[in-house]
Image 1: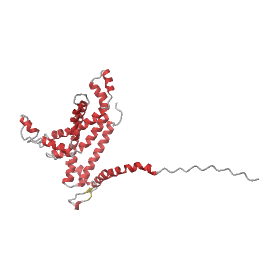
Image 2: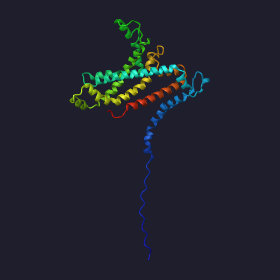
Image 3: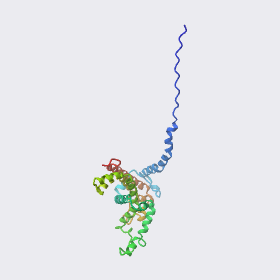
Image 4: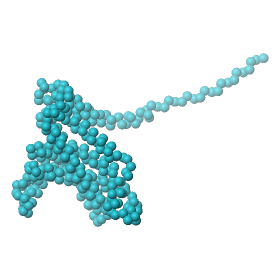
Length: 311
């Protein structure tokens, strides 16, 4: 008797095609140009500054170039009193400017958030200084502070002050004059960000507060301010970094004078590198400024609990 026919094997399942690697790599290929640009224009200059901070590098004195180790940092902290003077003035400049810009920006945002005739025009006038470049802002205020044709002459015509007064040349008036000039351009930045956040506050909250008998001040304190917390923290942090690195306005208005009264650390770095050609020491000062800004930013964000729920 013939053997029983062998049981037929089930047909093998069709082979699955391997998923193409191209679709998975496509997102990385698309962002590769942007990453390369960031590496070229951000990472490379930053790493170059760190590298030159450890070297003596002066193109006009090549025989002195070479590895310096931590000598540039030792010079800054132990043997350069101008470093501490400029750092102190930078801190003063940042605190005064950011505090005043926040105060006036918040006030303007609350005003233009109200409904009134000509609100669109009012908002355009409030925000327009922010559209002006820093160099043009400096040129405007240089003309306004001119002792012959500026504000001081018209005040002298009115009997307030004397002719020929130069507010930018007097050590007692140069700081307030520079502060006012920067306020003109910095206040709209806060007004724009705060107004944008005010638009998202529900009106039902204010109506409920009015029903409960809350005053305008209590509504501002318990509804408006908690809602604006993240916007205020972010705007003050950004503006503090920008004000710390402010060079164009002070350089055009005062050049760091008179007698170094308005020289910030970035302006001192610019003078050290461009005028004195001491790029090694300027790189060390830049590294110190970078570490200071990074440390202060982290501490500020931690203390302000940025992104957390407001109580």
